[in-house]
Image 1 (spheres, rainbow, N blue to C red):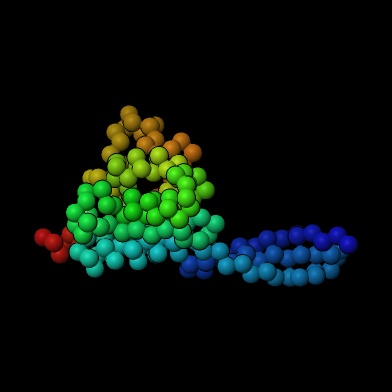
Image 2 (image 1 turned 90 degrees about the vertical axis):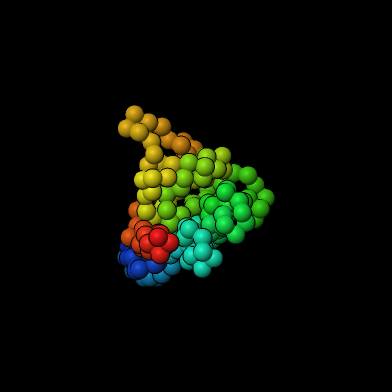
Length: 187
């Protein structure tokens, strides 16, 4: 008996990717549909936004982060600079520390971090040393972003680990609006 997968079709919903697979035995379909719910980048960025709203509720700069491995959130963090009186208590640092503790490891090559705003230079350094596999962020930060601050001559220099993939612009408008509204109220 030979069973072969002949077609794979992906369909996207707002937060999940559905995967349909048609399996054939000879000329007859044995099993026509397997629906796998695979969360999308948007889903995980929405989770990071939930963390950013926790920061907002604590009167902190509203930045949130989640770290994902194998489609599962293993760590969360939001800015706590004012609460902890610690200039390094950024969302990314808190999420990284939580992930290291959860895994009992200091490197995260198979993990993806989702951050609502482009990481600052300090956080880029922490991401470099963590060897994070992928960075996904919402909105760029032209004033303080560790990637945006590079000059035209430095654009070839990656402040992250050489193997780290970068995916910007996921739910960018939602992330930017949250920041703009926060700073508008502060003025």
